[in-house]
Length: 202
Image 1 (cartoon, one colour):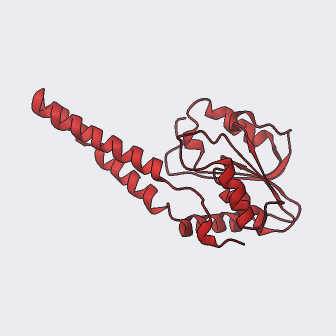
Image 2: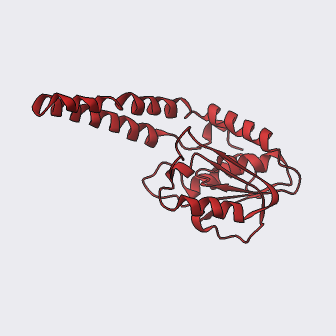
Image 3: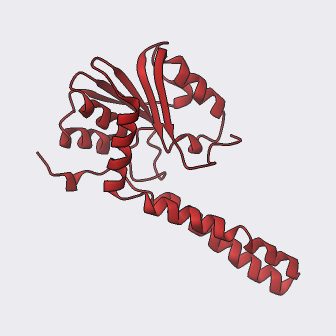
């Protein structure tokens, strides 16, 4: 069995890059506009610290140990029991789906994602490889699917989880929430992890 060092649960490079890029662009526009047109354009500097701080926060949470720690805390909070079916929405490299399958030998987990090229380093192949490394390939299923149109029947899962994905659903986010609730069994557990404020107003 491969060691933990071969696990690939992705990274936050994309989020760090985008936020830093926005900060740099605003700074450049503020300097150029302030010097060339009118000093009021220097006000564009005001949101720059916000984007830099977001980049730093994403970066700090990007290492493997931190991701595994967060996974364990979520699993302890949700407390999957024997026989539970778990759906991990926006599974990426399978972090949560695999973690829940490991938590109890009789838990079966499903991870869905669109795995859009260019949106990060995650892929279906990486998720399957991680499941092999962590010894749960026989109890984790991965499927390409949109959270706004989950291809499973009503009341199908005992637990539905999503980690750092809903803020990336820009269109029709309400449908995503409705779908996750639809496939959740009555009395089931629903848990999401998101950066503060990133799913407001969607």
